[in-house]
Length: 293
Image (cartoon, rainbow, N blue to C red; front, side, top):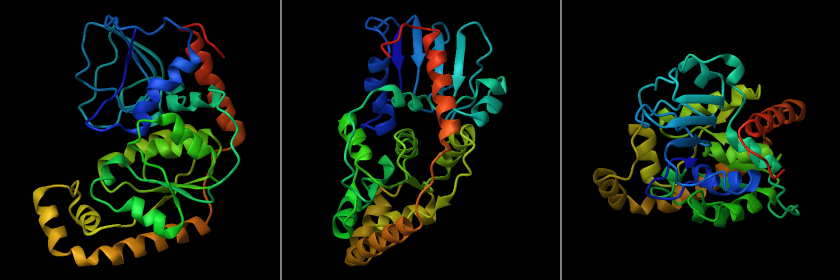
C-alpha cells in the first residue's frame, strides 16, 4: 500500500501532514512502496491522471477542480469517504460518503497539550509566500507567523495549539485549527480556483463559511488580486521593482487589517458535529487497517 499525496516544488502544510498523521494512527507495515495499491488521503488529489491499473483507496480526499473529473466508478476505486458534498456531487457518489476532510483524524494523534502563547497567529497560502511580505507584516503587528512551507509539520501543529485565534488563507490551516479547536478567520484565497474546495469542507461540517478579504502585503499581492494570476512572473516582478517605495505602506496596512479582523473573533464547527464526523472518519479507517488508537 503506497501513501499517495501531492508533493510540489515547496512543502505545503496540508500535504506534508500526510507523512505524520497516518503513521501515528495505523499499525506499522500498512504503508510500503507497493504501487499496486494507492492510499489517497489528505488533499485535493482525486485527479483524472491517477494510474488506471492500481487499486485506489480514497480516505477523505477531495476533488478540487484542478484536473478534469476522474471516473471513480470502476473496480479500481474503493471510496471509504470523501472530503465533502461538493466532491461527492462532482463525482456522482452517494452523499453519505461525504464525511469530511481526512485531516480531521489529527484529532486522534494525541498531540501534547500546550499553553496558549499567541493571541493571534497568521498562516498565508503557500503561494502567497514568494510574492508577499507576510513574515515582516506579522513581526511588526505582533502576530505569530506560521509558515505553511515549513516542512516541520509537528512544529506548525504545536504553534497552532499555542494559538488563541488563527487568521489564514490556507484551507488546511483552517481545517487543522478547527480540528485542534482553535477559532479561525478564513481569508478568501486570491486565486478563485481555490475557493470551491473550502466550501466542500465547510459544508461537510455544517459550517456557514464566512470569507474575509485577503489583505495585500506587497504590490505583487495587489497585482495578483487584480489579474487573478500568481503575481510571481516577470511582469509583476518588474512592476514591483518600479514601485518598491510602496512596501512600507503595504506592510503597515496589511498588519492593521489583520488586527482589525481579529477583533471580530473567529469561527469554529459545533462540537457535536465535529465529534460525530471525527468518529465516523476513524471508523472508516478502521475498516481498512489495524489502528494504534
